[in-house]
View (cartoon, rainbow, N blue to C red):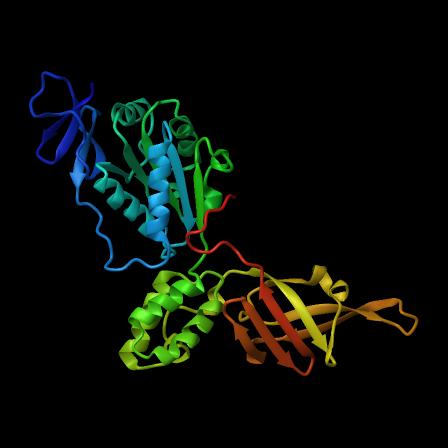
Length: 354
């Protein structure tokens, strides 16, 4: 049986003859360190703390992951991807906190541990345990990630919940994608839902009449994260401003957003243009507020034969209507009206595959 020797706030795998033995590693948070001889040991650190209120379905998702982990016979991998402030770190913290309530310790990996000694340390923890790799793609380079595959495969048997967070999922080793045997769950955080934003406004916005404007502002971003929302509400409350007024000085600009794909609906001379006549199968890629919106439409001669293309254009000043729930942007000028509907990506806390 594995025993753990405690010396101050450090924990080591120990033989029966050692003093202060524990048959299990107590619930808590630990990091891995090495002594002067290269032997690995655990050092206890402060645990995570939960915010006063958790929005969205973070708690429900954490409960599901932990239930799945305890129900499966061996290791379970979870990959949480998305930009900073999107919610993936909060979920990883809640997994640790809820796991501790069930007696599950958490080992936080803050440097690229790998190899036989590291694998043996994880294997020797025979009780259910969570191993958290925060910002995995930054800590482990490509070669190091490949060396981790056998550990995630369960070649070294252990009852371990491997949780990997990353900002850029395309920097994750390709052999981890679409491989439930290694990474069982993959959650992609692509921005807050409108329901999340409305709930947060209900609790924190001092002028509730401005809630709709916050939702409209959020819809201008393909991935409006919690950091943006929190800063926007804070600024509005501090100065009694509308969302539009507060946005003028905040480091939160729609023109910085990534290019997304939109479906195009075009109305020229008060008549809808058929989808087949719009360039690129009625799709447009870009940032609606980042510059010119140009759409090319087939031009026909009197005989009904195609006679080139006509280019119509709009810019941010032509924005006439926004539907935040549907992700629709309507622009109108002398060329006509174009409606761009964002091709929806997965939103926060939805299970998805690559």
